[in-house]
Structures are given as C-alpha cells and as structure tokens.
Length: 123
Image (cartoon, rainbow, N blue to C red; front, top):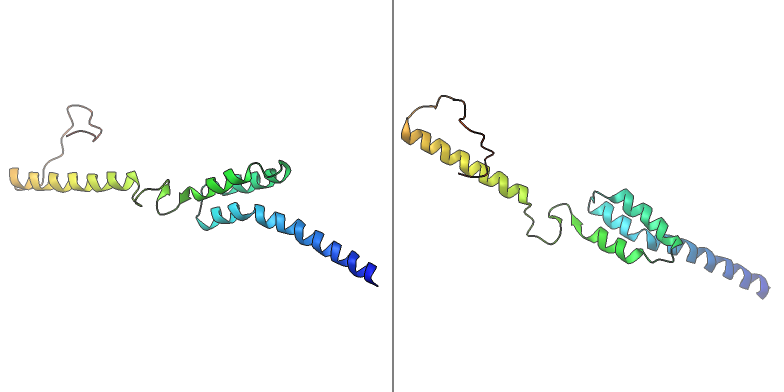
C-alpha cells in the first residue's frame, strides 16, 4: 500500500513541478500583458525559449517586461512623454500667435504662402 502511495506522491510532485516551472516562466509575460507592453508576443516566445536554455534568458525577460508602463512608456520618467511636451508647446505657440494677430491687426489674418519652409522647431 505504501508503495502505491509513494508512487502517486512522486507523480503528483512531478506534475506540480512541471506546471510550476511553466507558470514561473510566464510571469514576465503576465507582467507585459498587465502593463500593455508593445512586445508581449516576443516576451512570451522568449519565455518558452528560456525553458530550453536552462533559464538563462528569464532574468532579462523580467527586466524587459518591467521597463515599460503605459502611462510613462519606456524608462523611469515622470509620466509625461516627450510627445506631450511637444503638444503643449504647440498649443502655447498657437495661443501666442492668436494674441499677436489680435494685437497687430485686430481681425483674422489672411493666409499667405510661406516664404521659406518652417518645420515649427524654431521661432
């Protein structure tokens, strides 16, 4: 009777270890899904590859999954992407242009062809 119990316990522990390792290697993928990471599929595939490379890639997957957050994108910034700064500056320039037009002419300016190409970078 104890032989069957030991065999059953051995099979149970083997199955738990097998699935436990798979669940452990899916942790970076689950982090990527939770953070809406743009490379979710690549992280998931690399997690499976890491199973066959004796877990050498797994710490790098963890770091890769943790580097991205949807609210601040890549890195450890203040939550404001560089694009949001550009949009804010564009709004300020448009507001200043409206004020200048109001002070100079009092009306709506007539659109004219630009004399040179202006990419909006300088003033």
